[in-house]
Image (cartoon, rainbow, N blue to C red; front, top):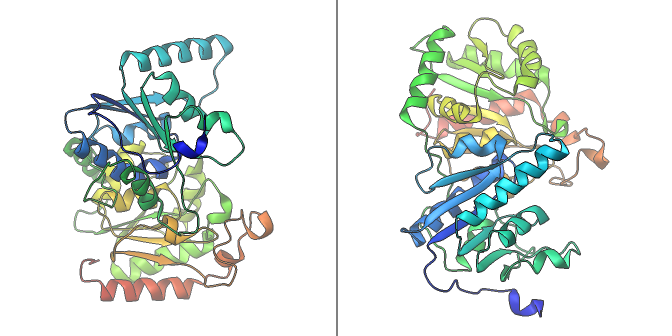
Length: 366
């Protein structure tokens, strides 16, 4: 097969009745794919649309109005017998969808295999230049990204869809949260004794990657300043595994600061972020979720590129240390897991930028 004939802007033929979307990225990747999911629904309003995601992201799409089904793939360890049973059932279920179009939003091999085994006659994906030619051959059409363009991930994915005639006017991620989840969060606020008259700032100081973190003492100083300057309640969030780290921060901040690490599912976390007035955090899934539910954000960035990953819109602020080497895309300086661009980002600079941002942006009030 001549791969050059497969690469480029090729339209989808016919009107697909059953569409399989595959997004096997992290939670943030799923959020940034929401404009594409919406575009597929708007382009094919009468099609049945299913999406495959990892289990950790699945509940985030429970209330998505553009999907008919969320198919979950587990990352937990399985015995040989369990794995065989899971994959047999999984691919049997895929075939039962009778898909005529499959779209994979990643360049990995797992999604490509799923697209191929779905039985869809049209399979579109992203060209991967990692030497796995067999992976590219599993698709009927491929799109090659122009790496000379520094694009936001959401825009890059939309460009992929638009190349195949899949369009939407809504270019930014929008996450729908059901009213019952919002009510449960308000009940949680009452149970945690958060005063009803207090505006709430959510702080997400942790990341799976330590080289993206700003530092415990700096966050403590920031929280104390926020509570004194703006009279807000501050909720520190994180995973269940980060509960003790969050507690160390909260214990140093006194009344008005709350530890919510591990207290919500990812879907309820989205509801929490929608109920708060402001979000501050590292370059992580929380930043993308907050923006997608309409909450103004401050993103503290280190080695990664805000051009690619920061929320879009004037209500969102990026704070980073300007250095010639930033962004470097490394796991800390020389892959040391320590980032000088974050170590040298001062508390004073962060507070100053937040103050100016709140003063100049009439849409945000604390």
